[in-house]
Image 1 (cartoon, rainbow, N blue to C red):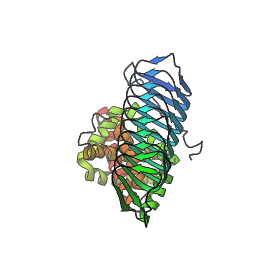
Image 2: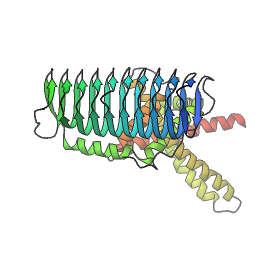
Image 3: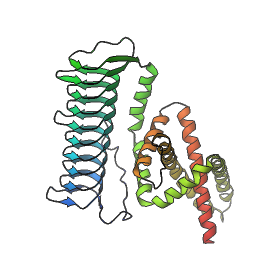
Image 4: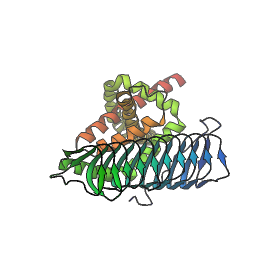
Length: 371
């Protein structure tokens, strides 16, 4: 489970959104008698939603509890996340312990240490889970794909259930479609469950287990949560500038990798030269600050670049105008890739260099125009 200190980075929101959106800092309580005019964005320690929300709800906090009827999507990041009420579209949740105890009109995507679908929960779409432990006691009308060390099923999956990991079934567990079980070694026939479709066993190599554990351990780290927070900070606070950098990078990727490499080599050399003289020390300090800022921004933009490509590859559409999905997908994918030894480091490094090259190019162009 995540430690309480993990989620300490709060996304800063600014009035770049339509006036109908509700933007909130710190502990936030949307009372039952209150109706949010449109989207709700909240960041703080404890976030409680009880009133009706007529659009999307985004929350980043230590504890998130939602009883609201929310007409569109939700995206929650927290240590302890509980979703009740009715969600009119998709639910995307990242957290330590994630509990679904309401009705979700479309898909649920949950990445957590533990995911629990309560007996009263109804998921009208499909369920996608990556977790250390997963429990499904409610009903899933679509398919379910679960990557978990251990799955407990006592509810019903009306579509196919595809599982990577161990499974325990308790009556009245039911799978109306096929049960596709990726196991290590010899598979055991499922018991205490009614399966209408076929039972299909597939091999799951031990490398996959190591990778899963590395992902679960690596994703839920302060580093990854900070990357998510900074990524959404750029999305909310500087969306146009973020789009400008991404659009500058995507068609010129390898040229920007080379330029980023040169910038990250030449800047430290320049800092060292200026630091040798008393007059040059202030310049060296300024350049050092710019270098640190460049590295921080490039680290986050690496995930945004991967997210923009993910939109093109997986959804066959442009990432622009920029939405929150490339931010989320890119950082999640980069966290997964970072768990792969050597390969992850190379991919992240190339993306970081490309981002550094584009940030340097955009900065120089702005500076030249200003001068």
